[in-house]
Length: 430
Image (cartoon, rainbow, N blue to C red; front, top):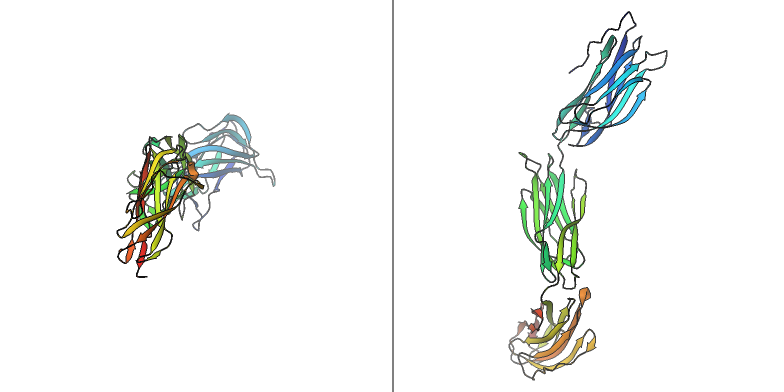
């Protein structure tokens, strides 16, 4: 569209003016000599209105006719030798307009012009757009509109990241459930999207319980258990369609150590992409209020000191009882259920936090289920307090091959999780 309004005649004869409009933009130029931008980006436009006629152009007002979906943001500079005769600034909405000016005639080698530079936010919809300019004057003026600024809004992804806790209140020793959502509100696929989380101190990644959305997983990378900085990778998230964004939503659980002090805890989440999307991080999000658990959680492990034991020989086991809570575990008893063909022989040592400890319960030689205690296992916090029992068992009639050992426990105020040896001792012929 060309805007070349009929100039208004002044009283009496006068030399005519001729205004030549030149437009430019600071948007990166492509091979097609058009500015190329992502949806919703900001760019600068400069209008140069030069008077090449023999007389001055008076009562000049400048209106920029923005393309559909564009929004005026701010004026950046005014230049040239035009004389402002009345002030008219752009309104908050609509096309920006400036007035009123007198642009003198050129004098010799002196260029006479009004230069206006301003910033706009471009449309969200991809496509080709052209910027137009409309001038009005109060004198007879010839107007050359020149070439419009041509801009191309390219399809681009645009990600939004949110994080939330499924439950606002949890207790020490329990699990907190989190939901991380990544929405692509842009117009193109976001490639190779990875999500990472920085958990609060005393929170450890436990398991991923679900994935939702219309994203396509291109690489399967999941966090290891007990990670402080879990990371998931990677997905292609489609662009928005019919008003609905492309979506990746993952749900995971974090274990809250018993030594965590009651209070409010947040996490930090981040999303990255291999192409066209800047990294994004949100901190102090997904708050969880942690309260003290009603029971002290205790973990137990048992392991042989050697991988093999001979038939009719002996094997030495080490039982470790750990308290990572902020309260002591009272009246703790430990029971070992030996494999068939194994029998208790003797206790080598009992140590609590590196110091020797006694046991009122004394297992009988030949017992298949030796028991020790009761003990008070002190509060350990993050570092944990440990009870370590080392004992020897004899092997008599056990079949050749691996034999798992199982350990369990009881307490007046603790919830004790038993265990078995991860690498059972293997009985050999001798």
